[in-house]
Length: 135
Image (tube, rainbow, N blue to C red):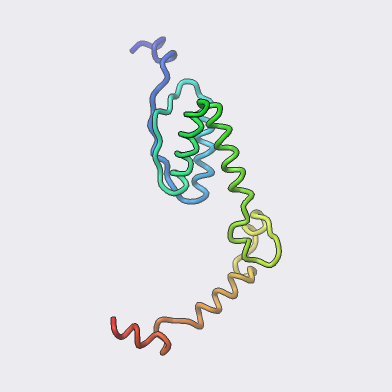
């Protein structure tokens, strides 16, 4: 293949996307860049966890309207994920994701309560001993 052919023919790539929560959001940034690059033709995608969510949104966007639509769909998807309350919804007061991320765990009332509970309940205590000894 000469250089003129390589510039006019997009490289076909199939993607394997990793999972892992925030890795999905980072991957969105990479996908966004790949989708705007006309020298790349994404022909398939698979993934686990957050990677699978990216693969599904990517594929749906590509089928419905091509790379530009896929970029828009991925942006809408991850912005909606970012607005979810998540673990914070267990707290009696609202806390932004940024505040939650910058709050040390030992100052989070839910974490402190869960830690105290875990220290009180143990599989080695008499409450659980009968069921554990049978194993």
